[in-house]
Amino acid sequence: MRIILRIFIIQMILLQFSGCGQEKTTSLEDDKKLKQLLPSTMVSAIENKELSAEIPIYILNKSNGKRVPNTSLRLKFKNDQTSNYPSDTNGVVKLPISPLLLKENPQVSISHKKFKPKDLEVKVGGKTMVFKDGESSNLIDYNSLSSKKMSSGLKVYFKDDEIGENELKKERADFVEIYRIVDSLVGLKNSAIYPALVKSQIAVTVGVPDSMNIVPVKVGNPESKYWFFTHELVERNLMVQEFYKQNSDIRWIGDGIAEFISHKVVETLEKQKPEIASTRLKELQDLDNENFSLWEWKVPTEQEESFTPGYGLSLAYWLKIDDEYGINAIKNFVKDFKKLNDISTASVKSCLENNFPGINTDVKITVKEAMKILKKVSK
Image (cartoon, rainbow, N blue to C red; front, side, top):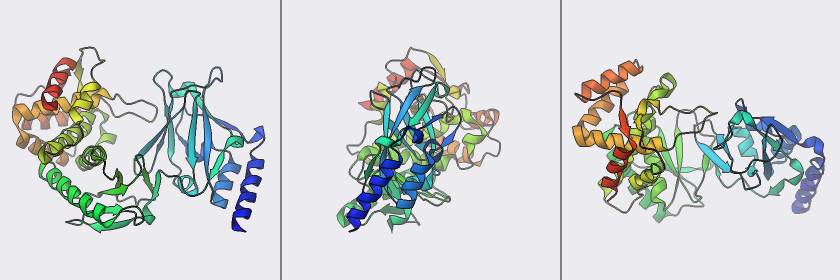
């Protein structure tokens, strides 16, 4: 009886969306929340009936209304996690919508290599939506997670019905080592960043308390654990006072040191782990041999696309600093940097000079030099 009733409800909702009047076109030039993109009747139906649906979202050229392929729709959640949904060759993004996702109501942005966000708009047509049982596979509700303590109050989160006891035991041991190494290099004081073990390649945790951050980590995936999680762990501990909001020019410190420490974790454990340096090396191969000032690698706004080679350039720079001054000098810099009350560029340069005597605070590196450094540590 419940199955018949559910089918009837879905059929009625599909009828509601069968007309053109339920389509909605929205510009993404300004920041938008997910619910602002969707027809109100669609939002109400999914929320009230607790249904999940795959919604086709059309990415359009605002000037002529034609679809734009190879576009990425990004959802940014309250805990700063993001999830990207690429369009197909016809400019269509198939976005899984659920009551859980609507409750979180993430911020939506759009990116394309050629077009700027102001040149694009999205069109949602409810008549082709496909309803599915259960929640969206890439969303994990914080309230559905169990946790196990590791040490010093640190925890690993997981879903009881997905992670076995042996898997949990192995993963916990790996994370204890990661925390130990990161703590010895940059410190983990007041850290509230924990791993959530998942089975899917792409996942986002929602409903997480504002006072903490949970980063999904795919079980059995070294890249997810030793690189992506470690990067977030380091960066969020380094930027303890929301430094990015005060100075967007210090990304080469936050992301750069996070990449550097991730590399150090892999190097210290001496196991077959993700090839961080070689991956970043490939991102530099198509660049001209410019002399980059890393101060210019800024934190992108919602309307900007990130400069991916900045990761490789900044990683190479910190490897160079490690070679010239040693890891203890970097540890002392991190300690002093985290204490700064004034995070202006002048103040950061002073901190650099105090910890790295003779350093050129213009912080420049050529593509050729960066590639040489990354090749050396990739062997």
